[in-house]
Length: 154
Image: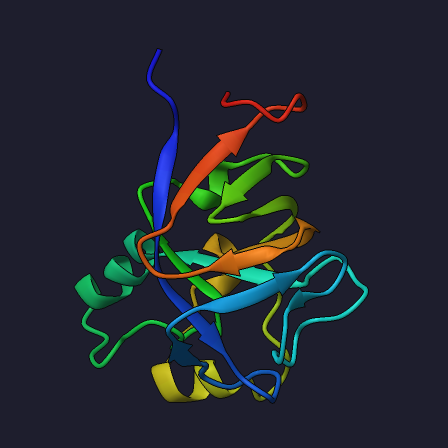
């Protein structure tokens, strides 16, 4: 049986909510908090946002230009896993960390800077959110492994 794996393409951060995030070389993800220094971090269910490069590519194919990691305000740009098809409750090992999927998609808030700049936002349908269960560092190139409830590969 093939193990479901993906990888981190970029780690992105911003000090404000609803804006394009800047790419960083590595991020510290803290249990019960999220990405240290990011506006979305805190004690809630949407500590970390993830978006697959495959979703970004759909927007590019629709003619949207200038898309790059962090453009949709995602903390982690990924590749190789269809994120929005993961059930809520799925556990992911990402680099040194462990995350739990808490929400699939979201509504863009009124005046969303991403929607204004890009014309539309893919996060409402294909972005996912997690909470951090195990602290650690995540950097581009790190593997993403889908875990089952026992903490081993599904």
